[in-house]
Image 1 (cartoon, helix red, strand yellow):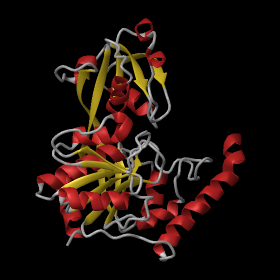
Image 2 (cartoon, one colour; image 1 turned 90 degrees about the vertical axis):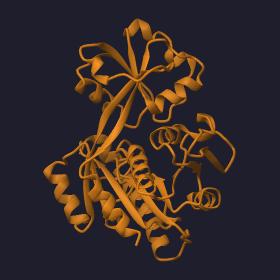
Image 3 (cartoon, helix red, strand yellow; image 1 turned 120 degrees about the vertical axis):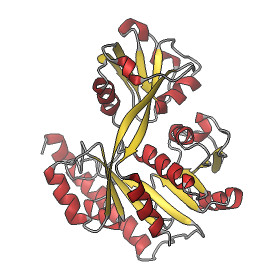
Image 4 (cartoon, one colour; image 1 turned 90 degrees about the horizontal axis):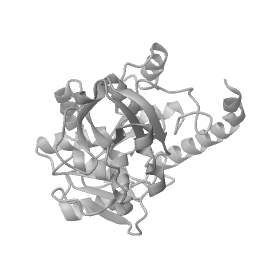
Length: 337
């Protein structure tokens, strides 16, 4: 283990202990767990950041709606600065809140799940009751719900980034895990995004969740558009183009790898922390470093809110492509019965 990992190992152990106690205290009934009179599907992960939770939650919500269910998406709204406890980001027809009130990921959810209302709030149980009273929700899909123990979920979908797996197997801050690996036993379904997992991580997953339904998916570049608006273009047009990557993501390497897979030549990068709030100074001098810059949809909503829109920034839209989607949806609907 690297020296930094060894130094942080005691803190990781304490973090893991706290996570175990939190999960156990709710499961044992020592702390309240609220049940809603609708189906609740949690989409979450064990490893912090970048496993594809938001595109998967949007895909699940959109697909269930297409099968005739009244679906509402619920998100914590990380990074939002509004004071309201619950915010209707989208009513399924129109976006009703900006990035300051909603946070970045809920706006991406609204864009990728048209027709599905999107609500944000720290207390997902209260958000669920609002989804029921306002939109008559039959299914509530939680973006990042695996650690939200106060609300009962009928199904937990837990995602892994195939390039990361369990990481070094240690909890934050000594490693990437939000909970000890044993928490995976609570997952009814496990998805591997951008896999496959290495043999070692696959073997560990098989031991921890042998009965879980499994599916595979990948994040696919779907379209490209100017940050200032305009028509969507084929991202294949980036082949051979020299460009910079502008991002504030949990795993910014993912955006760079997607662009390189398209054949783009990345000549510059400007990285910020996840959920970074952009200001004019962050965007100064871009044209001097690269003739064209590409950013993510999650970053785009915050750059636009900064009121400083560089002329040569494009937004890469990512879609989730699920293997055997009907098999996953049939299994999911079977859990509702």
